[in-house]
Amino acid sequence: MLNVEDWAEIRRLRRSEGMAIQAIARRLRMSRNTVKKALASDEPPRYQRAAKGSIVDVVEPQIRVLLAEFPDMPSTVIMERVGWTRGKTVFCDRVQQLRPLFRRPDPAQRTDYLPGELAQCDLWFPPADVALGFGQVGRPPVLVMVSGYSRWLSAVMIPSRQSPDLLAGHWTLISGWDRTPKALVWDNESAVGQWRAGRPQLTEAMNAFRGTLGIKVVQCRPADPEAKGLVERANGYLETSFLPGRRFGSPQDFNAQLTEWLVRANNRQHRMLGCRPAERWDADRAAMLSLPPVAPVVGWRQTTRLPRDHYVRLDSNDYSVHPTAVGRRVDIVADAERVQVFCDSRQVARHDRCWAKHQSITDPVHRQAAADLRMAARQVPAPAVTAEVEHRRLSDYDRMFGLDVEVAA
Image (cartoon, rainbow, N blue to C red; front, side, top):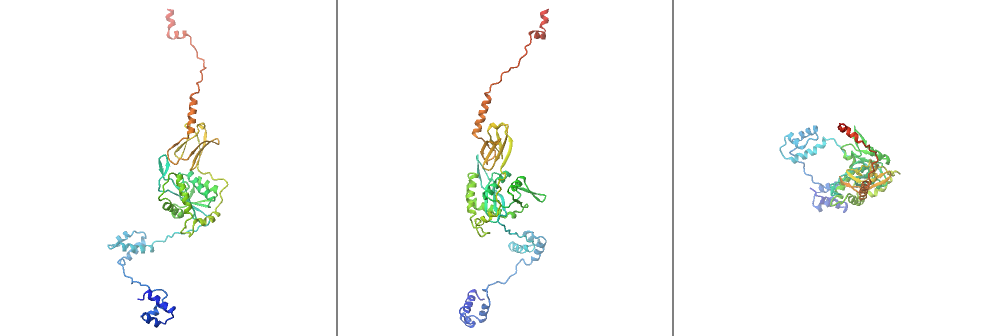
């Protein structure tokens, strides 16, 4: 059989040197028919071994019958049904080749996104311990948001997955963009909404948030992770590229390291885009909506009457309040960084948010004020009793005990 080297030389001598077929045959010591065949072929010769039969050919008709009725039947079960007793590998390979012929195709659709169209959102729970203070460690969630058109990635760790913290984290990321996409894509996170009776239903807090921004929130159907594949892949990228080899002394340290890493991540070459997300970011932002003149109400908002022990509870932790507000209505305002308490628009407490659980946070000023008020209450003199007391005559007591009778006797 003619090899590739001889084929290439024959074509060179004919095309470059202009040699006759007989001269080429004489030089290369081969027949003229071989030279003619080489010149007639535009592709190099290939060696193809003649197909040989397989030991599975005998039972292939039975395999096809089973797959036609049960396309997802495991290969091991098919082996039992057809009575196969020989090699497992060659049998499973044949089943793997035949199975797609009987299974209905379910291809994934590649979606193209317009600039400013949407951003996909998700909570990522990093498998790494973060120091929360008071000797506690935990793994708080990270809110991840990916823009569809530019693949711009933003993320921030939040104290909990509760609605106040989730929406506060959302506003942190969106205000960092200084623009808002026209739609946010979410799964069935309880703080966002749920599918009920075959229809998506957002929570009241999420409706208020999207209404202020003037955007749409798209809820994916249950058990459909492919609907937000961008952010799912971003979660994997964070876990494999950001997390390894890092230590975190606090949630603030985690967010500081994450912010620094995101700058590099958004300037990397994106395989699917063929460019860097930063190169698309300006066009993406330009098509987004501007932020509303009034920021949405996010974070914790509570109203309660301050008890005598002058502490308020927020997310399992107690925070001290100035005792002068005892018995009065106070407003609690909190986000991921701080907790503030107001009484008649006057600030009566300000604390750093505690990410640990079941702690009592006390301001020394509040402790001293409570001690002074208790001391002042003890030093107040008791009021004098001015009530008049009736005095009975002694003869009344003599009459009561019968003494007046004895004297008379």
